[in-house]
Image (cartoon, rainbow, N blue to C red; front, side, top):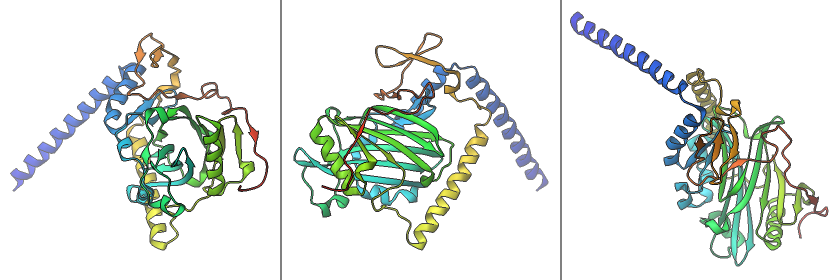
Length: 328
């Protein structure tokens, strides 16, 4: 019996030593890589999951060719989110345009170990009655229907990230950061292809519960601040079980954020801290300080919005306010 115990003990010591030296080797390998090599490696690892890494903001974002595009959107996705430790505020905005019902939805909150925000653009392929919208399946828009989108996510007045680009699903996720949805604010701008769509989108915002004075319109661009959702939340947590589920999910999210930060603490400097990305190449990739080219990956074509790199306040566009009053 003691002999068997000794074998297990020796095996445990050997495995511990192997893991220790393997960890040291991995740390040396990563520390020996340039910023562009690290970013490229991250993009390669993230691509099968539909995401890319944006070193200038030190956040993850979705690619235009993300596999999630095939699934479109259904309100059931939001209702089931707490089961997957995603606790967020969402704002679905429905409106009719060119003979079909469109949906532009905003999200902000905690996604597992990530604090993030999203803007999604979808269409139903036909006109829907008001009572059909929440149970209908929406398709992701095609490439020629994608819209110029921009968002800045802040917490307590401090910017977390600021991203813009032509997209069907613009996202940003700060890994290892814990936040509560009600503490986050998101400045949003949506640029429509024509004035008709912009006005239809504004009408949808008013129907969702926003006041005219909360929206700004400049030509074809609609801007707003998303802080408190006006629409009924799909996972509102009004029932006792739902409240407990959300609290347990957030407790778990906070715990795993701490674990993530502890494990990655040795790599304490984000890739963006060195100001490594100084320009863009003609192909839309980032040019690094050493002259090499970093592939921003897989059709992302995203960038920090104007003023983000210099610390300026997020613009977004010159705007004029709509007349006061609600509806109509």
